[in-house]
Length: 225
Image (tube, rainbow, N blue to C red; front, side, top):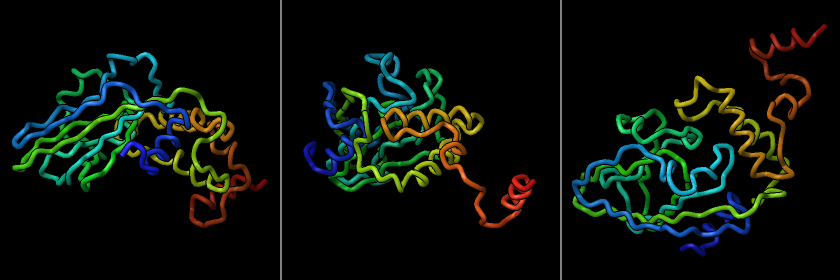
């Protein structure tokens, strides 16, 4: 499974061609009637935490599910974008449902690849079946001088649009500028020679789009002498 082209391709894209598998893989067993875990970040205040940046991808966590995972089997729940929010365990134990959370209901043989610091938890198993998950940690060993994925410069405007869009997690909506900068720096730290300016105006340039609407019209008025 670890040598499958799709797995190798994803790891190479995110960690570079010389990524390594770290020690510490673990089998998680979620028996029937198991209670849910609290939200947490793995080892955020333990081994190696001082080397983990919130504006880079240096470590990934792979979860392999050898059986189907239905919504009553205690699927792993994740909060997109939460890897940029460091939180002590004692501040997370009272949290339950968070807007934007995603439940990992998957088919047997599926692989879930996430940022190592993403907020996640095993939910309660209400079924009569055991839910297994095998965890593998991976790390970057060198910085990219160019993108390690199939990079097409024609896709940069679409990438920029996604980086500039509203964050999927409500944890940082009141800190848009801070979070936006972290997202662009994450891209730059991974992209090497394909880095882009922090401000989208400097990158895209040119006149305002002629798509119509009140906002566009007001911008045209400001652009006119």
